[in-house]
Image 1 (cartoon, rainbow, N blue to C red):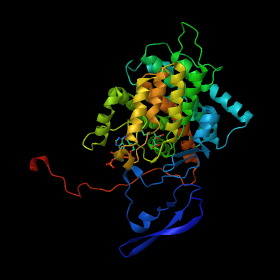
Image 2 (tube, helix red, strand yellow):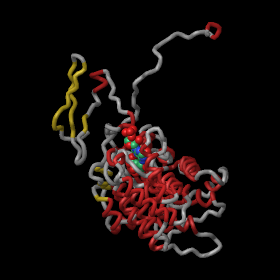
Image 3 (cartoon, protein in one colour):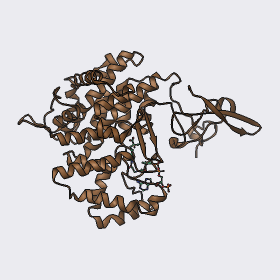
Image 4 (cartoon, rainbow, N blue to C red):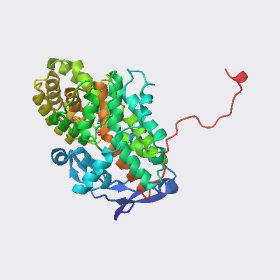
Length: 433
Ligand code: SDX
């Protein structure tokens, strides 16, 4: 940890006083380096869910949860959403700076040339039921990439790490689009090198061989913005899963498949699907108070999906941008008086005035409005989380590469507080009650 130590934290355990360096980052909370705690104090820290634990050093994304700020390599998400586009942000997240024109052209060409998947992978899809959730299919197919691209699975070879990164970012839209096509019984559509990243995904999802398909530039811009806003988010659950899997030197495709599996959970990336389903279940604005009551009721397992966040105790800046984009897309499509959007906005207004939500600092997060746009773009709810996974793949890859390059990195292996039986002797079955 290459940091200027500013002071020490002391911990007294019995007669022993231990000192731990407090070291600073360039922004955000200082950290207490407790790596010597078990060696010197013979105790563990205890932090289920890692609410107060920094698991690594990172230079990629910074979140100010109290201030509701999100920076990708120092650039505010609002500025990038307005002025940049997804592949440029991919370059920024992967390499640390905005590319010049030649660097961007080269990167876009490298990604474009890797968008096709091995033709034999088409057979993999046919092993799934047509009604399988697309996340199950995407997770399985991404895990299988190591069986087709084993020339980029040696994590100790920088060149293989680079080609695996490009392949993963390039192929995930194709894999997700094929999962969608398979689920609706339509033929797979190949990627096209004359389309930008977002337009390519839309044409792979919505074009059919029977007729020409023209990508709508307003809709592909909205799609690109959705990708950009979901690209990375510090050490969230799925990114931490990718880092932990990668710490054992597992191949990159297996690590990304692990991240996809974690993201699927409704408490994480699955919330965008769950949120739209909740809004539809509410059905009308006058039923909102009933659901607010249920969300406040600790005995009711119902939670307002798309609300609350481990880090943001203010507005999620991504939700703000997506809310504006939802208005633009629905107005453009002439469905601006969308009942679901009206329920979402009224629900947000009421919740933000409700003392339960205010006290617990529960604000809309990135998943609250994203489903409304995705549905307006023509996607079924089952495709919402695969699109989140598609977007987050670059963040997972950037964090995975950073973890492997970290000089202090070692295999992740947390300990526990043991509450089980102390040692006891085996009892023969004849002697048991
Ligand atoms: C994402 O980490 C990331 O960065 C994730 C993400 C990313 O980009 O990678 O931002 C993407 O996952 C966004 C979050 C999507 N999930 C949801 O919208 C699901 C609904 N939200 C909650 O499940 C919850 O807010 C979490 C899981 C997001 C955060 O959980 P925490 O930080 O562990 O907080 P908590 O569950 O302990 O909640 C704190 C309190 C609890 O009440 P008490 O036990 O203190 O009495 O707030 C309550 C919770 O009951 N609460 C909610 C609530 N969210 C939290 N009550 C009602 N509705 C909610 N949505």
